[in-house]
Structure formats: C-alpha cells, structure tokens
Image (tube, rainbow, N blue to C red; front, side, top):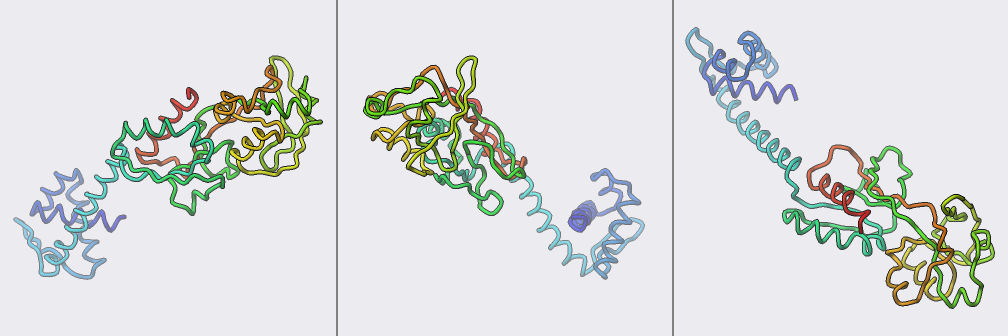
Length: 291
C-alpha cells in the first residue's frame, strides 16, 4: 500500500512539474514530499527526476515509470470509485442461501417487492436446507431459522415468529385429541431431525414434553405433508400450513398453547457489506414479521 501511495505522489509531482505545487495540492510538507520521492528512487535503483532550482524534468527511466504509474493510479482510483458506488448504490448480483419452504411461503412475496424497488440487482438464490459455508462458498447472505452454530459468523435477527401445533382431523379422530401438553407424549409427533423435546407455553405456564416419532426428517414440506396424511402432530409456523388449514387437511391442536417462537436470522461472514446486501437485510427486517 505504501508503494502505491508513493507512486501516486510521484504522479502528482510530475503533473505539477514541481515539488511545491504538488505539495500544495496534496496537503503535504514540501520537504516530506521530496524525501518520499528520493526514497522511491532509492528503492527502484534509478533516478526518475532531474531537479533544478526552477523546475523538474523526467529522466528516461522516469518517463517510463510515470506512464506505468499513471495507468496504475488511474485504475486504482476507478476501482475505488466503483467500490464506493457498491457501498451506497444497490446493484450487482445478490447471492443468497434460503431455506426452501420458508422462502417459498414467507419470502417470495417480499423478494418480488424488493426486486421491483431495486431493478439494478440481479438475484442468484440457492434454496437448500443445508447450512452453507459462508467462508468457502460465494454467498452474500444466508437466511436461516435459528442462530448459526458458527459463532464467528454475523447473525442479524430479522423476525421472531410464533409456532403452533397442528394435526389432521382424521388423525385426531383416531388417536384422540390431546387435552394438555403432557398428552403429546402418547402421540406421534413429527419434528425435524434431532428434535426430541418440545417446549410449550400458555399465558402463565411452560411445559417441556419428550416427543417420539417413527419418522426422522429434515424437510419442513415433508413434515407438513405427512401430517396432512394423518401421520401425527406437528409444530409449525402458521403461514407454512395456511393452505392445509383453509382446505381442512389440518387444524390447530391445543389452541391455547404455542411453541417456542422461531427467530429468523440473516447470516453473513462479515459486517462490511455492499449496499445490495445491506438493503436486502434491512428490507426483510422491516417486512418479514408483518407477512
């Protein structure tokens, strides 16, 4: 970086045709500027400038060096300007990893609205249930349900959403309607992989129930489908099962109780984000909880 700075100083001196003129433009003491150029010449091992009391002129080596330096400095300035635009103007390709069912149900309308607001952004979405590696893979952001296990990542909360219990009317007719959370221990409860306990809350009480199921699943869509096919009780975000509720395939169970609320996070590798990512995260933060 210092070498690039010295190149830029050299270009300014040549443009001004004097150390004093360049020093005034840069805002650096004349003696400091002269010493920096002398050190640059020593580093290169060639004289770049002929100095007289009235003016400076380029040596042959100086002319070659100036032409190269000017091109490099101009390209660096252009890159700096373009990066500055990225910080303030939402544009470019937004690469995001999204959970499949949540994205289809909750995020699709918001993404469409966001796309209309920012026509200069192109979207590259990977809908997957896996935890992508934000360090090794080229994603700007990952939207995830629950806080990431990697504490080195930056997790920004977007919304806290309630979850409830649902089952098909036929399953409840056959297996009985639970009257209290403890009754769930005697039912087929469909949860995501590694889920062995549900925590339930009403207005004043909290209950923890060990659950069991014949199915081990990592797909929200599959869990909902099995519940609609009379395979058991699920704990789910209401909007994900909205169609099944309207069509009577599912209905609420223990309506006065709810599960632990689900926090939705925007996960990034760094806090230093371009405008496209900043605006996307802020938009979701402002609208996701209202969907």
